[in-house]
Image 1 (cartoon, rainbow, N blue to C red):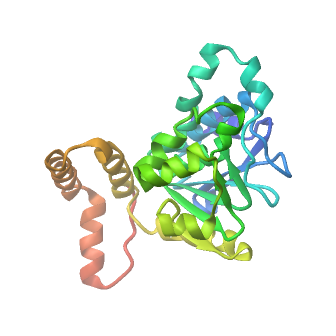
Image 2 (cartoon, one colour):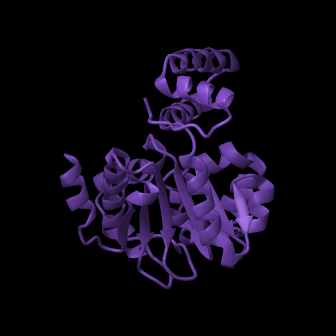
Length: 267
C-alpha cells in the first residue's frame, strides 16, 4: 500500500479497537475499545494482525503502542467464538497474535487490570511490557478444559522457566504486576496513575535511537532466541559489521565527539 492508502486503512472503523496516529511523536497506537473487559473477538485477531503490519509499513511511525480503554487491558477472548470457529481459522490464531513480534519496529504494550488469555498472549508478543500495579496476568484456559493456543505458554516458558510456567498454566494462577516484574516478564511496574506517562516516556526514549539499529537489534535478538551461543555471537558480529557502514553510525560517532544529540535518519 502507498502511504495514503495506509492512512486511509488505519482510519477505518474496526470492531473492538481503534487506531490513533500521532505522527508528531512518530507513534501509532492500537487501542482496545470494548470496555470494561475488552473481550477480543475471533475476527478481531485478524484485523489486529493487519493493523500491526500497516503501522510497521507507515513511514511516519517509529514506535507502536498497544493499550486499552478502561480499567482492564483484556479479560481474554470470546469463549463462544472458539466453538464456532473453523479449524482453519483456529490454526491461524498464533500467527495473528505474533504480529507484534514480527514488526520490525519496537512495540510497547501498557497493561492494567485483567490481562488474561489472548490479552496476555498479545502482550507477550510485544517487545516491552509496562504493567500497572493493578495488572493481573493469567492464562486461565485450564478452567475451560483447554491450554493456551496462541503462544502463551511457549513464550512464557522462555521468559520465566518451566516451574513458574506450570504454576501459571496448569494451575491457572494469576500474577500481579509487581510479581511479573520480579519474575522478569514485564519491563516496568508503575503506579496505575503513571501508566500512561511511563509509556510516553519509553516512546520518547526509543525515538532517540537509530531506527536502523533498533530494527537490527530486534530482529537479531528474536532470531537468536533458539540459537546456540556460537551461532548467536556469529550473527551478532555480522549485524555489527553491516551497521558500521551505515549513515546512522557515522552520525552517532560524530555527534558523540561533538558532544551534541545525534540526529538519526534510519539510513
